[in-house]
Length: 283
Image 1 (spheres, rainbow, N blue to C red):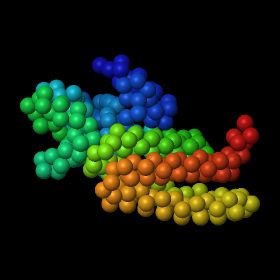
Image 2: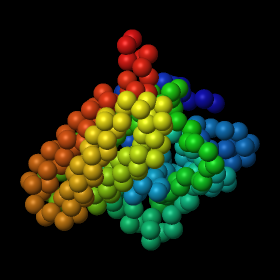
Image 3: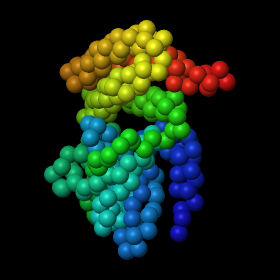
Image 4: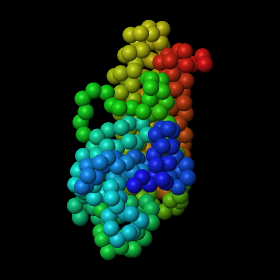
């Protein structure tokens, strides 16, 4: 039977590009659609996730420490091909249950980021599984949650803004403690995501605009130079989170760099959205 709480979260998630309030507010959240183990019927469940370097995301089948695995886990064991919605993209993925050694390493990272996972494990005799979701190759453009190129740009940027805010919050909360392994992965995944986004713009949006809007050439040239500056900021962020042993410096540098990155997202929207959607810019 449909779960009323989950149905409300799913509806809000899809309507707001991955943003939800209430229990999941501020969390990293995806919608995971699995096929029923016996029936083959699709079931969609909101699930928290952790980045894992960009190529895959990780989900933990805790069920709050219940004695049985959650239904979605039993489903993906039977049918490993699943659908993932992250608020920006909808894609097919392969679900792989991690073997014990890798599972233990990843679970330790999750516990470091949120001790609640250890509490769930302590409540149950089962070993709580960790599952990696890896996107399957797709022909053609990605399925993006947007009706136009201008809207797509804003949706993607808003997802980066949410992640920047989460990382800043996580770094602040770690205080004077050492920077956790999962937080490092979160930062490095963000860096790779922004790099990929800029590469996509320079190979896709920029040439398209140059062909249709020749007068935009000076704006596009300035943005290309801006991308070079952002690449330097991302390199700084990588160095800070991987090499710096001083938590106080990490905190100040992450705050500075994430603020600069947020300012860049806003500036890019101000420059590109009027070019992508001239009518919308005047509404």
